[in-house]
Length: 376
Image (cartoon, rainbow, N blue to C red; front, top):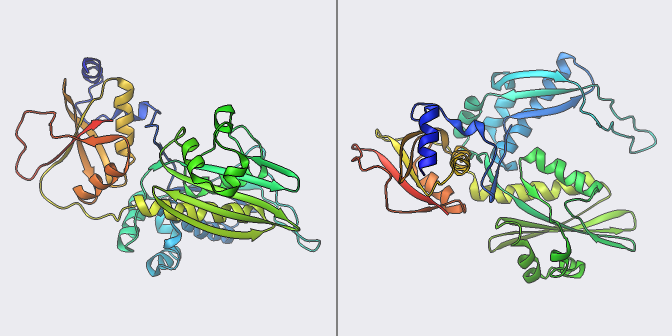
């Protein structure tokens, strides 16, 4: 802890400076998802009409990503805001197409696909968007999002295989593309000798969950998505299973389009996972200050990880270290919503556990809220 005290003293952390931007490490059980309020869409021209159409499309994509769910669709306030999309945009610019960009191909003999020339990047105003979501009674899923482990078993004719982290596959590409669009962190299994000794293709295809769960514990404790792709005649038949804690969902979809199949699987997964973590933002109530004490920070890296973790929680607008001692670090938090929202999200995670010991011996002022946790 002395290392932390000396380090923070040197850089003046007791002021308003927040050093979490200096570090990129995050808790192993979750991922900080950036650029939630930004969207890039390929365009065929730079006309005003096309640009406005893209603004509206990007606005919808951004809201679904921020909320984590398609529940934004059909909301009357959101529909009205889409028609006034310019008030929600803070920046936009055209960029070159990324390296390796694949132009769409004709799906039928008579179709002529668009030829894209640029990418339009749009950044939306965080505060204005969050106000719209609050007024629309829609939740916000924070930047701190748990990973979903993805197991994909494929039967294509005589071929049978499980997709791995190192594999290159059109199925894998489409799933990753869909997950990025929804802001859903995913992880692929290594499926190395250790995994193969405990889980076979037959186990995964047959839904033997005891074996699936045993192998999955190696990677994380979050949700598990299993997809079984079967090529039958002229189309894919896909059976999806999502396990979140003890709750299991199953759905099926048939199509010849890999993009549609993958998007369907990822979209429903995002809807179900976000329902557990997204919170309804509220104006901060009360007249006191809001603090959180963290014990067990034993290195500069762990300090950076905790800063990143707290900053990624949906109710937290800003925070900085207000007091440092050998017992731990006290953070002053600027939050939207109430203390129960933050306690709920922390309890769902695996990073902190509550304790009854405060960092400071100073008595809190009337109305102050102080939470105390220890790093697991």
